[in-house]
Length: 376
Image (cartoon, rainbow, N blue to C red; front, side, top):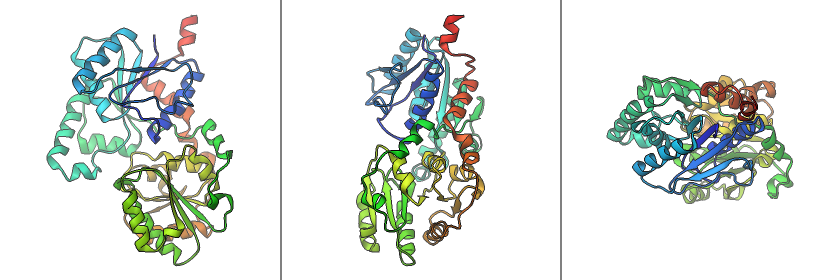
């Protein structure tokens, strides 16, 4: 019998899967058995780092209905003690399993982002209302919902109007010893190897949510005051637009968009400040990881993650959203050495993988590892 099954349309890389990987290592190290279950074009995430004991099952389905039935058959056959879905589409499918006879598996849903802040939903009021009703109707069919931040929990309860199910805030386990140790690995980027001026680093998908145009405009203002360089790690459909904006701002020589980087920790360890310009977030893995590496952070005060992670500005500089001048001022403040001073161990303690992994087990109601149960 599997102890914990994780269900989603997985991708090989990504922040959501990084934090899950961190927790998987904690669970398997303590004797819990874990299985990944996917559908459509889902793949094993971080395959080179996955513990060999973790099973991988592809349901071989695409539509919601066929996936729901296939997932129910999987639960009836494998009988995991709990199953956790990792995003909205997998949440909906897992919730709909309740239409079939009970398999004895406890079902939990996780929500990594706010629904109320989504600009796409805001632009389509009818679709927004439909999604809210879907959540209100389906999510209560499971045993619990996990929100990655207080802001996401508040969004579910007060904006979406979710009722009839326990919604528990559990911070992501983004800070892990084994991943932060990779900060010592070499980096081949010339700006970080032979540093001649400060380097600002940002990381994330190149999508509107991250609002990189504001960061580029802020960097252009900063460059009028001092020498600096900007690296934005990540891929996405916004790259051509950002490259064009950089040319218009005259900063293309001091901006690099290297795409996906397998080991961002080594880059963070050699940068001078981490910048986040997002319009909304659930929680922000890279901000927690930057804190774990001792890298100063300047972030927009967007809903909902940065304020929680940075303790209202105690652990980093918070600036208004879509304000290039304020972001430039925050970056300059940190580069002058005038950012907040604090105990980094205290700052990252709530976001350690061990803390998150145990909080999940407590919410699942799992009291002891499978190997201990088998020996009893």
